[in-house]
Image 1 (tube, rainbow, N blue to C red):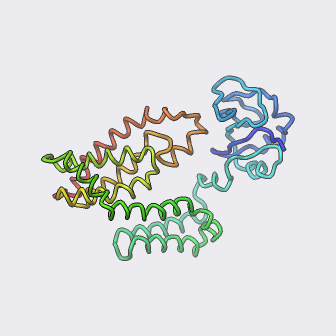
Image 2: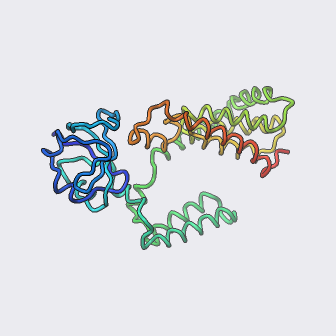
Length: 296
């Protein structure tokens, strides 16, 4: 069954009057453009076949995607409508709303979790579990919501990559790559090793998930630190920081991919700002980490 244009409620929701006035027949063929206000709704962007239409006027066809701005009440109504297909789950979009009645309970659980992590009273895994259970027991979230909030793809990804990381370490591959890195920076300051590890992590992190990158690079970094006599703490912190430098491609991190389609970005758009951000990230990481965690 064909549906009328797809609507994204990524920002604030939709006005109820929009649902009341715009039915399927009224939508198809209607000229719209970014900035158009109709029935108290502002059209932010229009996309057709995955491509942004820009500022030009577009006569809507079935399957077009429209990003609009409005209030929350009509989002639920749109979810049950046969005339339009809401792209974003209203429950997920509502996460950006102001603090509610359970917000302070959530803040309290967060504070306890951070205190447990910072104090080292319990292992990090136990601290995280305490925080998760506390959110459910204090009714900040329902058990079903907590279950749905788990990123099972990430759990499976990390679980599958742990054996790969172990294999890199035990097979000698980590020592081999680490040897090349140490030879490359031989005779130089410890910051040269940090810079080389940053570059390795950065390159891998732009084409592979940053979670996977850290798991792959960690055994190499450990071997390089042991072979060069550099302390382990700054090396591993460098890998953690470099793994988060996912600015140059849309596939480097899920956040980049999420905003790609709604904003109409292309693959090559990310490096334009990402290159400057990465350079600043590199300078701060390599310059600051040895000051906090001595390399000797």
